[in-house]
Amino acid sequence: MIIRDNMMLPTIPTPDELLDKGFRRGKKAADLRRGEKMPKHLKGKRIEETRVITACQVIKDKLKMILDRTPEIEELPEFYQDYIDITVGVDDFKQALGALNWAFGIITQLEKEYGAKIRKAPSEKAAGLRKQAYGRISSVVHKIEKDLDFLDFAKQSLRNMPTVDFDAISIVIAGFPNVGKSTLLTHITDAEPQVANYPFTTKGIQIGHFEKRWTHYQIIDTPGLLDRPIGDMNDIELNAMVALEHLADAILFIFDSSETCGYALENQYNLLEEIQNIFDAPIIYLFNKMDIADYDGARHDYIQEYIDKTENPLLISAAEGEGLEEIIKLIQQVEKRERVEEAEDEYEDDENYFDLT
Ligand code: GDP
Image 1: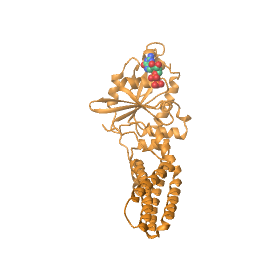
Image 2: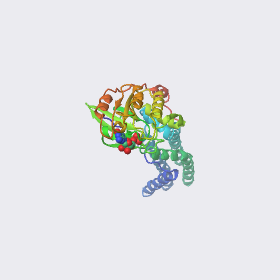
Image 3: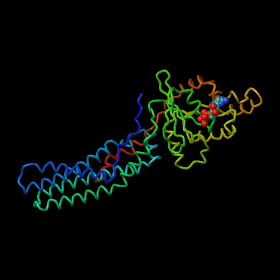
Image 4: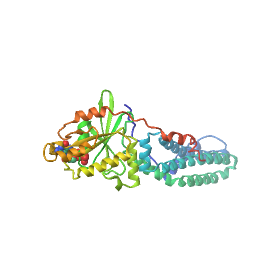
């Protein structure tokens, strides 16, 4: 079972932190040279050269570490690409990384340029040249301030991303609030569900797992997203839903037959139709709260009308554990959906993206 670690971005420094560290280490390295024996007219130059080169190296190392530790977005599963796009914006993200790469390139040039200048110049000019180099390094690092800020914001925003198992069969639960989604989730999965952030849901996303015959299943509930009319959603919320579409191998749609959730079956059916329009995944239909629905009595025909509109529905009571075995049997028939990797071609020619120098 491969579960991707949450996307952990490295700690992002501010421009001043980055510069302080570089200049401080430059000074330290230069101080070490002061004890060395060498002709006086060379020593001053060596000291300044060391300061410049060490400062550049330290700053470059930090930038490189950030670039290396940040995952290549286009290599991530589509669900994460969507997630990052909705949460912070993929284009902005790439632009910020591109800017760091740019700064890396310029500082490499400055390192070479001023190293050579100091070596060639007369001793008394060395300190002035080092100051000039520091000024230019400082200006480059300040130019990427907004990019460092953005990456720090991205780090905070992506901190509690859902941990999704892309080898598992994924079932996404839908239905109005209070129809019994989380009750069902906790009854059919082991242990406490993982709770993670999900854009535009107040309560985040809940992921529960169970295993049957060596197959891993994950059940996903998104309170606040698949539980209200889609016509009311803005574009970003719709995108958040499309991300789920990329994940779902099937949808578990839950009706509250008792209508104690506060929504009439007709409204619940309308929500189902909207979800059917958006998701290609097969749907498993559940009629919940049968224990209090009065299906054996006066409400039989009324409920039956909706039952008849769905294919192979299960009548269950999540709270009483009625029908759970049957749900699991239906889930076991769900197959992993093959997805075309749309993104692949699009980025193929884009290998030099970060090479903006
Ligand atoms: P969600 O908002 O869809 O996740 O709904 P919950 O799982 O929180 O359930 C809402 C309420 O309905 C809770 O008070 C549950 O105890 C209750 N409930 C859920 N399933 C059943 C059921 O099968 N029978 C009865 N009688 N109550 C249920």
